[in-house]
Amino acid sequence: MKTLIFGAGNLLCSDEGFGVHFIKYLEENYRFQDEVELYDGGTLGIMVTHLLEETDRVFLVDVVDAAGEPGDVLRYEKEQFMLGKLPIKMSPHQIGIQEVLFLSDLRGRTPDQVSLFGIIPASYEAGVELSPTLAAKLPGLAELVVAELTAEGHRITKLT
Image (cartoon, rainbow, N blue to C red):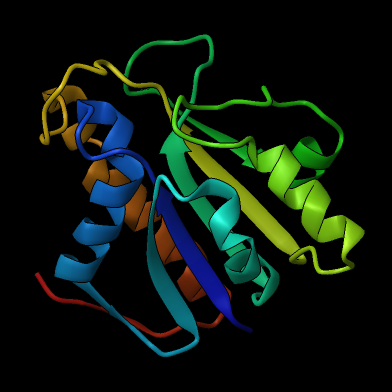
């Protein structure tokens, strides 16, 4: 089963870059087999629809504009996207994930499983570092995703 871990975000706006920092964290701390692709999606949005369409399982990591406290991690599944249960724009940099999935669905290429781990940002200030609140969330979220992948049969090696 081909799996994509897709981190979105703008590295120049502090916590907005969380998804990209997450991919870097995984690259520095774990080794994945070829069937798991780590992708720094930056601010590309709809330009990377084809990556979603070429996989069976997708984990999206991004900031979300939702009720809660900075650092809260919220999980959404494909059914919630397709039923319109999420905001169209989850963060300032992108076309809504619902729109990307609807486009894929129209083409008959929606991945079987899609999960979004959305984190509530503490800061959008200019800067390339995460706030301490969000930086502290990287290890725990990585462990959660790695545990799910392991349960699905992927072999992952922790480097540190």
